[in-house]
Length: 462
Image (cartoon, rainbow, N blue to C red):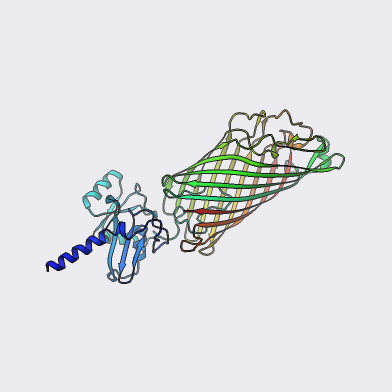
């Protein structure tokens, strides 16, 4: 009898230490949702005769056990939140559901070996206490743990917004992501308000008429999360602008500018993080490292300063404020993002671009575990340029006259995201494509007619 008690005690002590010995954070995957286990304070184990099933959250284990006979499992273990993740018997634990303790899958569940400790934490943070049977009853008809959480299920193909959206998601603490995007935009012809403007109409007031313009941009981004609520981001742009023009004599010529654009430093702060919805604040500061004195040779003058839209930066320190709301169900996700960019001061050339107000709304559908399709609407309202660059002749071309600045546009996009899943060799890579067309344009004065936009990108996260 003494021998049996000794062996039983040693076995229990061994199982109780699994939190450190058997779970490898960042390497082991949840048997229910396939997410990597990153926080042992919420982990759980279900041990049967053949396998140890590991879970990143209590809610995942409870959902895993639905419809299964518990008697086939030798042990059901959950992490004691108050002891830093020591594993305890799940059937004898006390569970707290509190909005102040965010578990990985959004059920806000933590477990405790001591009822007294659980009651103390409940008094501090609020919430509801349950035993094992009460917890299972709550989950009987629940959707907790399904692959629908918009913030945490980053392996879903629609977990991220379409590739043309920046700052749409937070990362877990110590999460890291690098991204590279390529965007090209083509313009052809000119508009006056919402109507076409011909070369002859332009030549009544200007010596040169723009014919077409192409802007190519490479965007390199880095994201890092010092906490679950805060994600920081750096975004550096590299631009190439090419423009074809005709003068009054019918002579055609081209100008170009290329180089580094402005550097943007952003912060995303989470305010709401529920099972199927989330909301975070977006804030950014634009550092004016892009050139605003780009020049090129023209038939009129060598080394002529190029007009405002051909410059690579704003020349001012700009602030962007806004917020992003996201939601998801089993196959469908959606989001809305509003951003306002405010220009500060005046740049070294004597002007500043107008404030920019943007509204993005999108929805995406997961066709399979590795591909989703999306639709997006993007509304923009850009105010006109204030001040003037005295080196630019406002009678030379419409783009050199600040009266021809500012617009309202609505763009529509179709896109797709590819994800390789948590178990794939390329599981940390996400690929996105998007194609956009303007469906409404109303420009101030005479400006170029936007044709289409193509964006492709690669995101790598760990």
